[in-house]
Image (cartoon, rainbow, N blue to C red):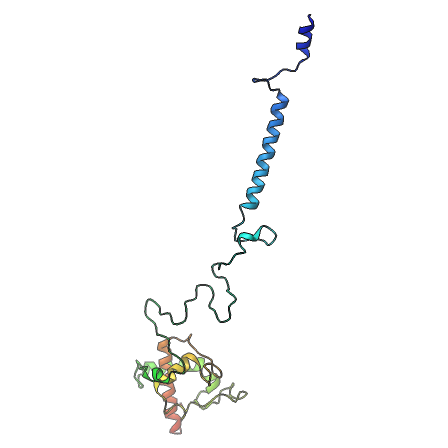
Length: 215
């Protein structure tokens, strides 16, 4: 065997293009490592807009002057979430906002139910018992349990005689006592028709009370 043949025998076999199998294996390992790094980076940087973010994981895309859905703005007295602005009227109607101390606007409101409407009086009695009797008492003379420990409850009998239906309705809606809601809280959560029924029942209590009777 010639010296050239012996040298060729000791030389490692190469693949097509002159690369050895070891070179191909090394390149495969490097490619796998590169893919792993790219996957890790995509998980880290790709989660910048993820809602469930953590302060230690790149929060710079979340820390910006913007308001997220249902987020509390932190502004005193400012509605949060998707609450409608003050004075907004539902698309299916509703009642417009009036100022609690606007007596002209309050007196102009018209009661849609007659004072002697038995259905209105019966529903007014139920609503009054649920929301009003705790303070004003069953007879409207301020004998409710709250009035026993709080001196700020006024009787309805005689006090409401000279007031309009609209005024009583507005007090139920927004509250009363100097500054709106200072002494009596507002009951805007009561449906408008139910408030008018309460007005009619308060009228009934006032009439019966001034006659010396009981409901």
